[in-house]
Image (cartoon, rainbow, N blue to C red; front, side, top):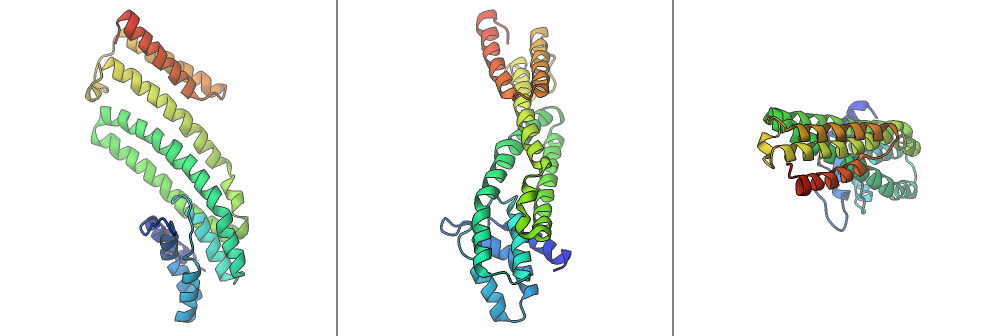
Length: 250
């Protein structure tokens, strides 16, 4: 199996959710992604059909990490591993690939980038939104390509790559940055009187600027003590309500 074969499968994996059904989940997309590999391994049409049909059984994974399963299945099929072993591997990876991918992408990376996008768009307009779009797609391409190549290289030991520090750090820091950016945007929105279009251009009142500096300082302190800024954000919301209701600021 050449790297070119694997990359063709990787390109197809961008459409892995296209054939999603509640009965088979992403199985159709998985088979579509596996076609270049199956063709390389098949000396006849019957062999090709046999490989593809076996993978039509229900399968699910986070689409951004499904490449780990795809690459490993390519390695297993190439060395003619038992059908039962391949099926057991796919079943065992559904939970880890789903849970890790959901935590990494849906719960942390995308919310953090959403907050960053709102902030950059307020100051840079469409260029801010495009910058965030580029950052996210660059990262997701990296995840997909790494998954397929590592899956093929490591085979049944692919789970070792899912425990790498870069994934844990991405979850940790995107969680903290997402919470901090939410707080910063909240302070700026208060200073702009709720007009999001003015967030990047208004001159903040001293009280609002002080609130922003306080929140950033507390967030930096929480980073050092490994405490999520979510707690700082909650305190900021309470403080903001107090300032608005009792001091009439904002």
